[in-house]
Length: 314
Image (cartoon, rainbow, N blue to C red; front, side):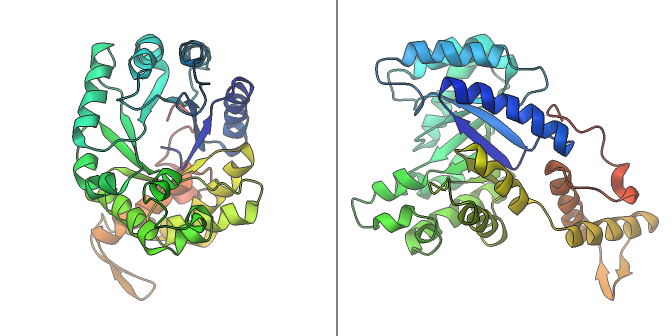
């Protein structure tokens, strides 16, 4: 998956987001962010049905190569069923995944999976949003579910769920990386994902006009907490997120050199740069190249042959 997941729930912004996705795919040579059309926060109270029809229409008319997803209402919300019927039931072939917010238990995941199955979307992956202390406690069980592809951390609801025990600064770009309860939750979610081969997706940065803050947050999330994907809630956040989650030019060169040496040794252990490397480190450096590919970085000729044409469909 791309390293950035961009959320939008207002009609003009949803349409512009898909246009921007196509433009940046052309620029980067790879699709560097998903567009998730938002029903939970995007639909006005009382206008949920109309919004679901709108999201369905936008997804239906998206380009075939577009990476588009939808965030529906929680499974216990009155509009969950209509979201699934009116959106997933009509355009599941155009969707890359469905985001389920406020997941508390594996039973919630089962309920969502069953609802998708009933409208013919039995192979569509689920992304789930972990937003409470109890959900964090069950993160490993939730991540183990075969339909779950990714876990996201819902920062603001998580802080609010503590009844004032976490100060409001815990929702800011600094406090969310220093308050022990918030950091612990992020680590639990990341660890649960990596234990089960799923993708941990980091939460929003509400200071969307502070691009340096976004870059710092994305760098900390990826380098210190193990997140390989991050949310964007404003188009200005996409590039800083992609840049921060991309490997550096030095890391790419190092990985390419090592993979080339391994290939020449028929994947047997090698001494490279004064260090012993074997298949464990080969996997690590291959993953660096995959991340470089996902973020539209230039790949050395020695490893370009491993990667096909880049597009949103890959």
